[in-house]
Amino acid sequence: MNKDQVKGRIKEAKGKLKEVVGKATGKQTTTVKGRVEQVVGKTQAAYGDAKEQLRKQP
Image 1 (tube, rainbow, N blue to C red):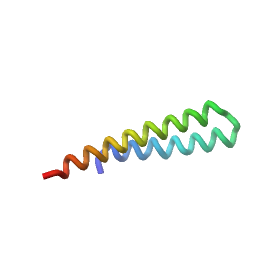
Image 2: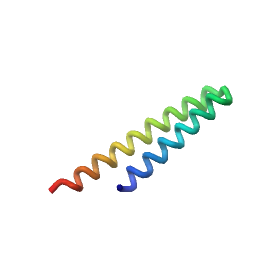
Image 3: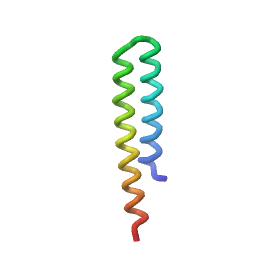
Image 4: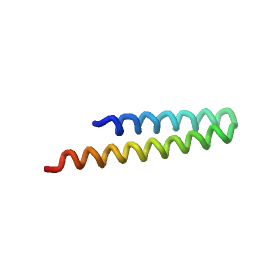
């Protein structure tokens, strides 16, 4: 695993937590920020996955 994969998955998890907290407290902005953070995390993890695939190519 490379740093982009790890950081992306951490951001994704933090975003999910933020979304749950936003729903629990009824704060729409926190919920939306959590969803956005999840998308950013997924994108970064996907970039890291692609980078790892290229590195493994002969």
